[in-house]
Image 1: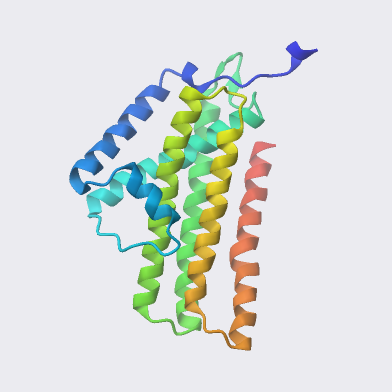
Image 2 (image 1 turned 90 degrees about the horizontal axis):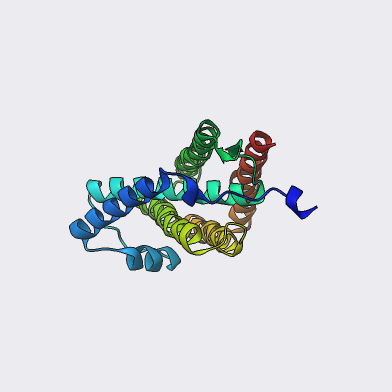
Length: 228
């Protein structure tokens, strides 16, 4: 009976995974040489409710943005492989066409979320007459925190693959907790856009329900449809 239960195949069995990790660690190393900021910076800055001013150059942003994107994709694929073991496997081997398909869905999902978020902030700027400096500060905080989360998830996925059993979901739970913290941090920083009159509190409540919570539920639903 137990033999019929599908078991997830560890990503270490893929010949390409080590190349991806080596390349991303190389990029993080280059970023460290350029900016003198390594993993501790991403971790500390992520957990600050109000992020410090980021003085990274365009090169730093590209390097960390790439690693962060890979981190989101790897974390999602690893979690997917744990909860639905056969979804990325065909005939006992990795189905790279399927892996690429789900990686594209994951990438498209968070790009859509980022685009949506940036557009909504611009709309809020017009509706509530928010000055451009506050908008710029918020957008920098949002993007930097999002990238920091991706880099942390990248390192978390590395530990998960190389040091944790394939069926263990502890680090997956930690990753989900980090994502929840990210959403809380973003919501707290959004409060800075609003004064606290009764009318604006009501509008802020509508904002949270329609422009924060609902889109996330929709994205989860869409992604679950692709999985099923």
